[in-house]
Image 1: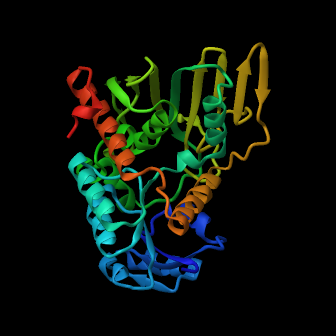
Image 2: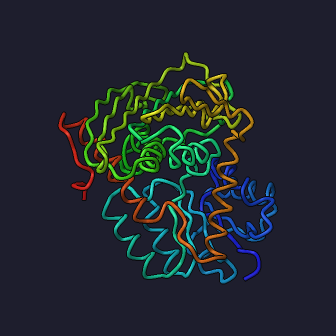
Length: 357
C-alpha cells in the first residue's frame, strides 16, 4: 500500500479540523467525500480538491480505491455506517462518541474484531500536546503517586462562533440522534475519555445536573457537578461544567468552549490550563513540586495539532498494523460512563458504569 486513500463520510464543520491532518500528510490522501447536503458537498470538493464525491455512503464504501474512512456524522448513524464500513473492508476512524447505546457499541466491537481492520474511536484530546506531556509527567512519578483529577469546563461566547445552520446543529440537542445531553454525553465523551486516560476505569459515579435554556428553545444539561471513584488505587475525580453567554472565551477555531485540568499527586500538582480555546492567559502546562513551579510555555497548544496528531496515529496504525486509541472496547467504556452520569442525575443514586448495558 502506498498512500492510504481516505474517504470522509460527513462534510460538516468539524471536518475542517480533520482535514488539517490530511492536507499535508505524505502517507495519506483525502480521496473521497460523502454528504447528503449536495451544496455543502460541492463546496468541500472545490475547497479541498477531492477526487470523488458521493451523496450516499454506500456508494463510497463500494469504491475499491477507498482504503479507510473517517465517519463524521450525527451520532445515531455511527453504528450503522461503522459496521457497513468494516464489512466493506475499510479501516475506520469514527468521531466520538462511539455510538448512542451500549448494545450498538457491542455490535461495533464484534464487527471490528471480525474484520481484522483498524477501528478507532477518534478522541482528539488524547493527541493534544499538553495532555500528552502531562501524561508523561504523571506516569513517570514527577508529582509522586497519583491521587486525583479535577476538570472544569465552560461553554461561553466568542463573538465569532462557527456559522452552523440550525438544521445542521439541532440534532445534538435531540437525545435520539445525539445519544444524550449536549454537555454530559456529546461534550462529555471527550472529558470522560481523558479522565480514564489518566487513572483508568471508573467504578462508580454520582452526579447532579441542572439545565440552562439557550437559543432556539434548546437546553444545555449544565451547570453540572460529577464525582467518580476509580476501580484501582482509591483514586477519584470530579468535573464541573458551566455555561454562560456572558463569559468571553477567546478561541481560534470558533467553538467558545474551554477546559482546564488539575492533576494531584502525593508530591505536587500538574495543571493543564487550556485545551480547545484560550480562556486562561497562562502557560498551557504547569507543574509544581518541592516548592518549584515549572512552566512549559513553549509546548504546542494549538488545538488543531490534536487533529493532526490523531490522523498521523490512525495512518501509522494502518501502515504498521497496531491498535489505535480509542480501541472499540475503550470507546464502549466511555459511552457507559457518560450514560452512568446521566442516570445518576436522573435517579439521585450512585451508578456503576459496568451495569449500563
